[in-house]
Image (tube, rainbow, N blue to C red):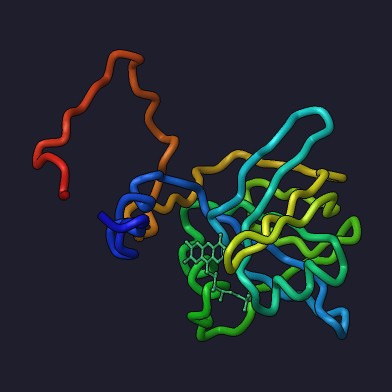
Length: 175
Ligand SMILES: Cc1cc2nc3c(=O)[nH]c(=O)nc-3n(C[C@H](O)[C@H](O)[C@H](O)COP(=O)(O)O)c2cc1C
């Protein structure tokens, strides 16, 4: 038996953990905004308010490493195109507007925004966990964009399930 699952099995199993979708932004060398789609956003602690994102090396990673600051913008259900744009599939109509506010770059249509200062950066494999203290945040009502089984999904959060709701895997395990 090998020490790791094969990458396809790992990706498929990990994709069953449903997440929201964020765009992590920062400021590039020239002061212009950079951003990338990230679903690795996690809240870490309440006191002080602390979050993390796990970013692989690239333009946004470079900007966060240099400035030690980033913003997390939580996407609404109707912002699939923005999620795709910041994952490398550019919108035909051009780059979405990012507003400079409170020293961060913010997506106006996000349902929540967090402005963070990096307090710790932990390198793991080909990613870095950027642990950030939240300096500023705000939110508004709206259904979130979700990501599950490698697909964008609509409307997670629309339905509150009863505590005894239970489902068994109809097809059984895939391995
Ligand atoms: C739904 C979704 C979630 C993603 N989450 C992450 C993530 O948490 N960390 C990461 O490094 N890349 C993630 N990616 C891939 C990056 O968005 C993509 O590689 C991006 O182009 C990197 O931008 P950069 O060149 O500014 O680094 C995700 C992509 C998608 C579609």
